[in-house]
Image 1 (cartoon, rainbow, N blue to C red):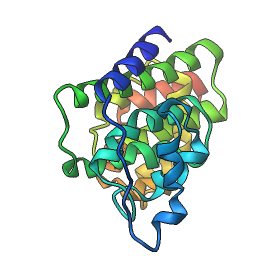
Image 2: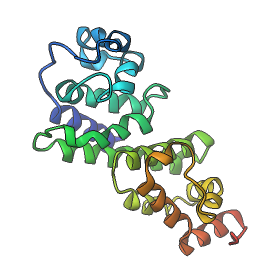
Image 3: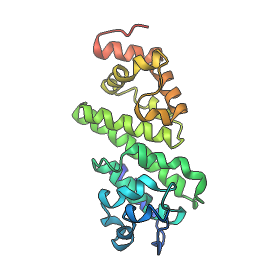
Image 4: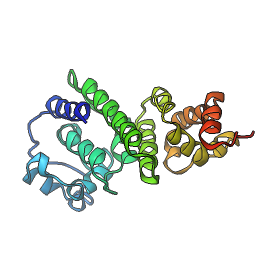
Length: 222
C-alpha cells in the first residue's frame, strides 16, 4: 500500500494544475454531463457520481485538454480504490487512447505510468494476501483491458501475473478457449485488438499451460 499511496501522491503532484473556469462541450450534451459540479467542489471531494457523465463523454461530446488533465488524478484514484460502475478501468484508463490530443507536461507520463504499475501490483498483492475471488480476478482483467484500450503494451503486465498461479488459472479458464480457437475478442477487448493479440499469445504459452496444470491438476488440451 505504501508504494500505491506514494504513486497516488505523485500523480496528484504531477497533474496539479489550475482549475479550469469552464468545461465546454456539445451544446446538446454538456448540460447532461453534470459539469457544473466538477468546478464547484474541491477536486478531491468529487465522487464517482459527480464524474460519471464527464468520464463517459470526455473528448467525444464534452471536455478538453485542460479539464481532462485537472480531473485525471481524481478519476484514476476513484477507479483504483472504489467499486464504482460509472468509473470502470476500461473507460477511465481507456481514455489514454486520446493521448495525442494532450500536451503532456514533463513528468506527467512518468507519474501516470508509475501509478498504473503501483495499482496493478497492489491488485496482485491483495490476491496473494487474501486469496482469489471472482471480484479480484475480474478487477485485474478489467485493468488489463483498460490498459490495452488505452494503447499500453500489456505484455509486461501479463508476465507479472505468472507468479500468481490461481489468477493465471482463473483467467485461463475464462479466456483460454476463446484465445485458442481464435474467436472474436470478448467484452471490451474488441476495442483493443493489439491487447487481445497479446492475451491470446499469453494464453497459448506452454509456460501458462504448465501453471494451469500445476494449480488445477488438469492439463489444458488443444
